[in-house]
Image 1 (cartoon, helix red, strand yellow):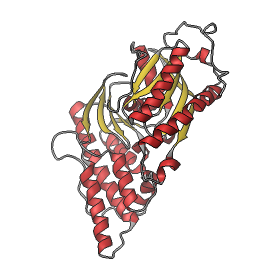
Image 2 (cartoon, rainbow, N blue to C red):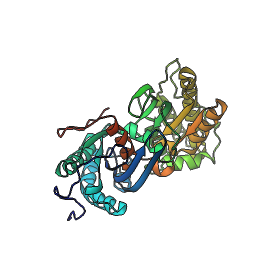
Image 3 (cartoon, one colour):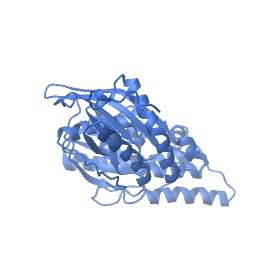
Length: 358
């Protein structure tokens, strides 16, 4: 592909603006390849966060036949997609690389082979165009997705990042300083949703269908354990809840019985809601925050979102969550977080490497 949208070194304007910036961002941590161009402007008097483009190539059809993400397939698919997505993102945003002030990329956490594709592409793009390179934590990116739609949201606040790979309760003390105060000790919440969906014959990813079925079932039909650790910590354990569902379904099949998928979805969702709201309530009481953010792919679950919104209303806490289009993995959120990392002075070296863990 001819990169006619690239700027030559002679064309490049090396002056960097203090606040208003355009960033090209790359995300490849799991099974979505994404490249975005965002414009960010944050001063003492106002904040403007604009998505100029947010190109996403989903790999769901490639992984669905296996019932989950296959890392090797994900890495190859990222390599095939990232260059053309970058070209399309620049074209949709109506900018050339001469207009871009920095390149941001997800460097951790995620699937190492998938991350390496995005990191190496971003390094090459930044180096060849004399642009600053910014490494971004994927978890921080999910939180930053909220800045596009909630201009009043500013640290400090409490956040729950819930996705297929992560379940973390976080104190966001500044735009770049995050303190994890609770997390899952085993399975992530999104992984549990997908595995329960799979045992019921729901195609990967099963979260959306589980959300729909839960409205149609009896949430008291099946007695299930909670996923909240029974102590004063803010940790979770979803493996026991997941296993309880799998055992219940398998025992019913052995007896020749058929459980209602709607009842399974509703009962499982009820346990998740109670578990999460218990720990979030404890965190809000412990730290006294008056703002709460729900972020990550599982933020798209309407049952969980409604339960946490009710909790926040009861405690007089402002509730924030991104729109569905920004709940999943996308590069726009990486660009938003990259902006604040840039303002803090963070710059990645050319030997930047990806990390599977944060």
